[in-house]
Image 1 (cartoon, rainbow, N blue to C red):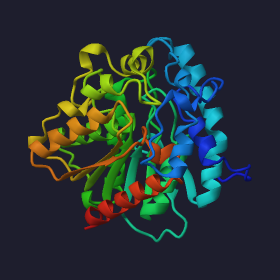
Image 2 (image 1 turned 45 degrees about the vertical axis):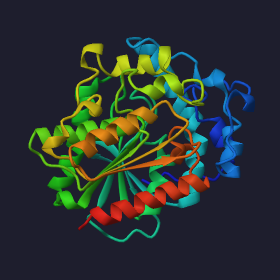
Image 3 (image 1 turned 120 degrees about the vertical axis):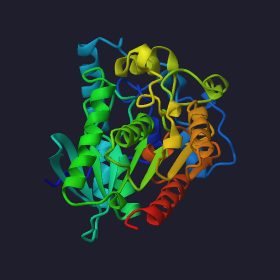
Image 4 (image 1 turned 90 degrees about the vertical axis):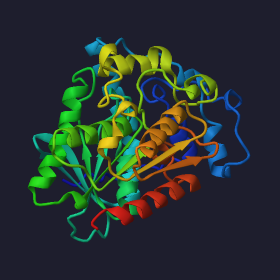
Length: 352
């Protein structure tokens, strides 16, 4: 199925930035106040313009209670509608071939970049959204540019959102997709996995589950601003809480964390993979993050856990950049540089 639509007027970088907070997408826009945040001179002019559009009021808006299923359905539906235009523009810009299918009984979007040449190599993608927001379709703005820049076929997992499913079922869905790709005749050397934000935590947690169950592990892992610890643990949760233009924990990310996993389970390695035992092995990993996000400690701590265990890992930090800047602002110079590094990294490990 081709998901390309007739082209609307393409959103500018600033328009995409203004739509990128958890709740800016779900509710009406709060006034954009550049003075809400320091806009550093050390980032590109385009990034400065984008950052100046963010609003603190949008970032701190509360999310539904963890067990309010009806409220979550309403928010989830509203976000899908709000994201439709931006995702349509990305598809129109890059012109991929997109097919809806199921792998291992799990719905996915199978994305082949323009000019794709038949190859067994595949990049599995687990989207972000704090486990309770977005979908494979509303995160085409991540998967499509990634497919284009890497030249890889991307399989975007449309996992069931919390609270409608919990962490154990959601990680199983990712494992089932990967198992199905193997059953199609691929080897582990053909498969890599990437995810951003919650999707980064999900990717790492699912790989730990694959390893621990004896299935095996992908050739490489890429994590963008991973939510590697869904508890409010880490220095930057405090030190950057007033500098982060997108993320806020009390009654926002906290509600998402509780919707995904009971508090007693939130430090389980498959939920918060910072707590994983990496001495048992893990694929080569690239972690990217910005210095303006409360998840900075997640990136640093996850890097240290992998590095201490002797896993080949690179921590790639971006001055003055906000949470998953590669996704919502895919045309920024910093975003293009970050994705180019991902392409080089995957080229060193996938299909070898």
